[in-house]
Image 1: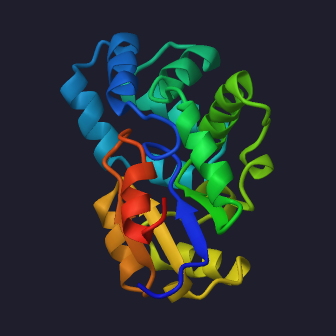
Image 2: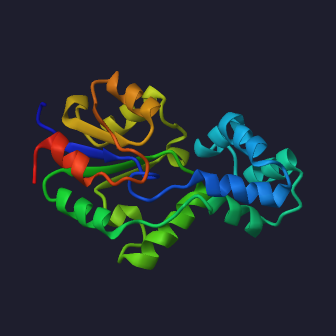
Image 3: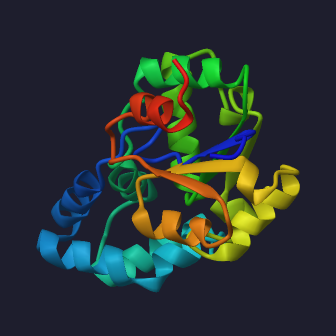
Length: 210
């Protein structure tokens, strides 16, 4: 492998544990719709992609969920159900990131949204002395702020440009194979991290460090 200078981290499933099934269950309870129908909507509905791109507001997103699932829920109830997928951040991952920061430029690239951003920063601050990921990482890129999302090539190109990183100098870790395949076509090195399994051992093997 050529010299890696920058490590790009996905957030959900790589840094913070992610349980999408808990959000599906929460919306099933709120709406009375079967979990299978909620899951199908989550995977196929265009509104989720628009929200991750920051193309609709929080209020518009909540209203779209009310319309789709015939919800009478309050904003707080919708946010709680939407945030149910976000779990904890294991302490060993923070320690590994801090160690990697001494050798590599460490970047976060996440498909996320404003409601989730607020929640995972609350989770971060509740366990660690950081109120925002930019206090831990060298650079942080969120899809809803860039108006771009993975796996579109433009978001990787944008991050490489802004971080002044050549594709062959970057290693991207994600739990989504489609995202990795897209990054790989640009010449970015990739590493698949099975969701919530931790990245430390796989990364050590990939980079041959201890």
